[in-house]
Length: 335
Image (cartoon, rainbow, N blue to C red; front, top):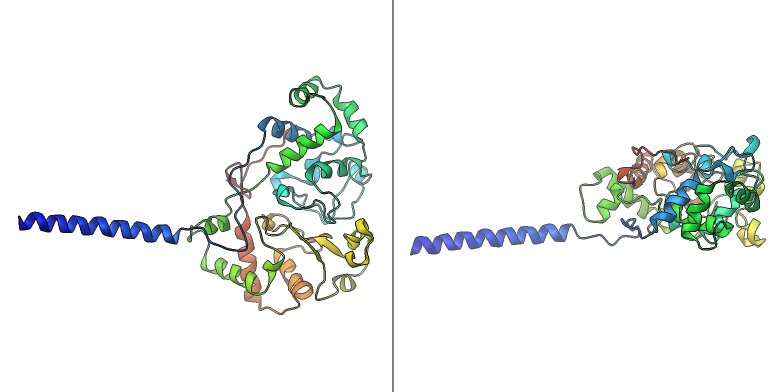
């Protein structure tokens, strides 16, 4: 009898210990309440519109001379950018501004550096009509696509009114919204996996908050949700020189003097893959970009070690595309 009671006591203690251990583990794995939020894992988008939009995104017939597609400046195999300081359009025309990444563009509150497009649908029309980008027009594009029975049928199956500019814009925008990159190592950390980042990377995040970087770079996109003057604490443009119209930022849209040199704060998602940095592509590396931010945005000094750790943290923001880390994903171009 005593042996039986002793056995029950030991089993009970063992079960209780297991329950306590599980409870402690769950508590440790609870999502963290931080100014940066993880990218949602699932999206609810019409897969047929995504497929059509992907085809159009890679279709060179959107340009006047059939030489460029959206993917020419937003290469999905290169972090959604072209890797150039400023992009090159039809006929080798050099654009005035750096191409931002198309990945996670659906998280931006406005599109383009100067925020002139309120939606991805509106943004989709911009490069098509820009003489230094695709140099075309919707009537010209529609005329080409109307000769393609497959595209006409695909559009008609989705949109009752068939081949229309607004339907092309809708499908391209839907595809672009599908280009989200969840499951960055930092996202896994935020969701409770404390082993997802190293001690130095975590220190980098703490410094990112301590120095004030997080004031502009927060939320799901780690930016992309506000405007800010480039050069709050120092005159970036006086030091760089050769000021161009592109440097005026929001002023080009509003003609409000207070908007001079004001830009949409860029998202830092996948930032390790999107060099060169800033609207002018002047910073070749993350280390250079961080140093400039300390000088002209924060007006603060930071040790080389602190800046290096912040860069280490920024590298944890590289997410996954189609289930694979974006820097390892094999992304084929749909033609």
